[in-house]
Length: 213
Image 1 (spheres, helix red, strand yellow):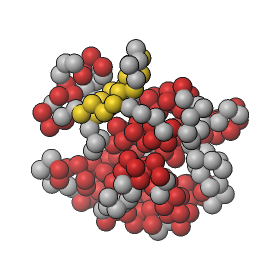
Image 2: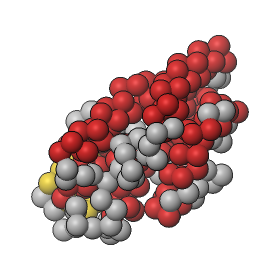
Image 3: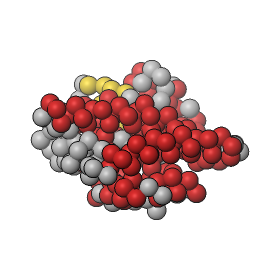
């Protein structure tokens, strides 16, 4: 039956899953969900994700939703394929786990909201609120100050090796780098080097075409 990813190419969450599959070198079937017509809120997709949000994921008879849960599954189920993305050493995996949580709880809170304000709103014909965007930039900057200190002592957030902790950031960073708010990354040298590293990976290039795409 194989792997199927139900999503949309502009979806930040769907991109996380596609990046993970690319790092693993896995083949999959892409099932396009038209977000403009509300297809994600209708059958048959709503049976795959009852919250009506992409992506949906199938691997044989296994059905999943929530992008980070999907990447965790892929990393563990296909641990022998491609880039490891996790670590079987318990202590090293615990550190990776910390930064996975930081992304979902700290970075996401500011980064995705900023992306919505300045990237998604115009696509929906809405006017961005510059004051809100500046506030979110400040919030994101505080998070990245912590990253700057971490990356001064570690090549990647989870340690010496690239992992899910880094991968989960890529879609939002890739989107924000195309805006004037890219400076929030560029003005922090260790963050900037890390961003260039993870966005320059072959799997990232394959899925997103790099930061200038």
